[in-house]
Amino acid sequence: MTRAYLGVETSATGRRWVGPSEEEARQAEALAQTALLSPAVAAVLARRGVAPEAVPAFLDPTLKDLLPDPLSLRDMGRAAERLLEALIGRQRIAVFADYDVDGGASAALLLTWLRAMGHGATLYIPDRIDEGYGPNVPAMQALARDHDLIVCVDCGTLSHEPIAAAGGTDVLVLDHHLGAETLPPALAVVNPNRQDEDGSLGHLCAAGVVFLLLVEVNRQMRERGLRGPDLLQSLDLVALATVADVAPLTGVNRALVRQGLKIMARRQRPGLVALADVARMNSAPTPYHLGFLLGPRVNAGGRIGQADLGARLLATADPDEAAALAERLDQLNTERREIEAAVRAAALDQAEARGTEGPLVWAAGEGWHPGVVGIVASRLKEATNRPAVVIGFDGDEGKGSGRSVSGVDLGAAIHRLAAEGLLVKGGGHRMAAGLTVARDRLEPAMVRLGELLARQGAGTMGPADLRLDALLMPGAATVELIDEIERAGPFGAGAPAPRFAFADCAIQHVRRVGESHLKISFGDGLGARIGAIAFGAFDGPLGPFLEGHGGARVHLAGRLEVNIWNGRQSVQLRLEDAALAD
Image 1: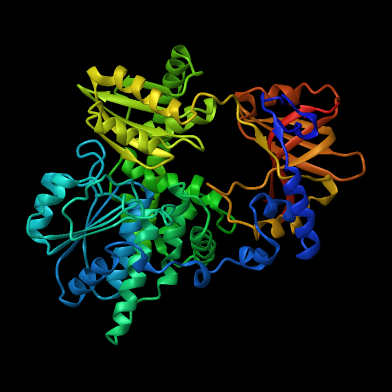
Image 2: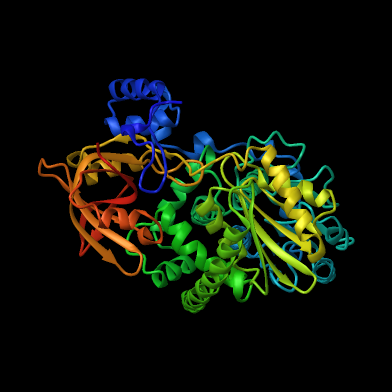
């Protein structure tokens, strides 16, 4: 085992600090010298394995360099031809979408593209409680009666019976969820996670797949002497979906999100403008805003309200309609937080009583709202560093959602469980999955799921090591440095924001904020001083540790960000951990 960084074997939160390896340190030094980078940025790139010759392309990711050939995905050519045929023939098109952000953004991509071409389409999003996830037989039969083409986005890969129920109406599936050995009877199933794909584009969310489809349709139109809309203007939707669906920000996803954030900053899409305003966003959009301010509000309609509100908001061209929809979604998001808090408390109590040392943490309750079980599963996963499943029962069946940890493929395990007959149905991807289970199969299903996850190494992990990219002096943490670091982004799933350590610091000011947050300022005794905030510090041991520091010098760790107050920019540390300095 490598030596703990700064000698921190057990921090205030019980974690071991791990710094760059010797190889990464050598690589960072080489990058700093050859690419003329600051040591901090060089350390970030070394951690990501960027070679010196690849630095310019990495710091400036472009779609020209990274966008794959859409035709590298199976069925893509056929799907694009059929959509173009429907457009040119003025056929009736229905878009069937999932009720989450990825589904809503995917639907909005198609709806706005068709509208730009002078063609309308019917939007259908199933009710989470009454219909559940994905296509269902009654809905597909009804849509087939009135439409010539049904396009399923962010769903459909496992929907054999519902798609068969569409009869003579053609169905296209544009999805990214894990596929089975057999595909549904659709005209085309475009999915980078089909069993017969090589997986090289498996990190795309559904909106990324839809974007590639539209790129191919535009190409086919050019061959016919026709001109399609400027697809770059739709990258704001792709960026939102990619971040909100926790797709890894690697490969082409980096370029999609980087460019999408630039488009979003122009405030051209009425729905996103209205949503940013109700969320009180006062700075240029970042992945944080997409994942924690905008995404939850778009999701709120599908979770506890009207399922199609988010997609309608993202697709509308009417600022007044956008404002009304955004206001409603903001209200629903507030209600969602209240419901979530009650379920979270009950689920955590139950999970702790059952024990959180095994390969799986799970909880199930009567009447737990199916719209919040996924969020609560995320909270359990974060609290225990274990895959987590939370299930709400209504009658003899429970609907649940699971979230996984790095290195453990929960979607594959859930899929296996469904194939073995322990679940009514289930599916998903590596980090997230959904399931339906009969009440009398709950215990054996969870036992079996634990066994499958244990084979992947779940349950062998204690509190997660805290990975640190580099050591910084307070005087080196400047707004200019943060701007330079941001060029290595965007940061999020699969590409975590760099985390820095500040060694042997004196805490100069401590203030509790609200019920559970903590603000401090610290310095190194050489004149430089930085403010820091630790959200939820008093929900765990970090708050009491820092509040009672008693003048001791400490090591601090966290992520740098720019704080804007009254138009003034300053450096702030998003504080995550601390330890006594020897």
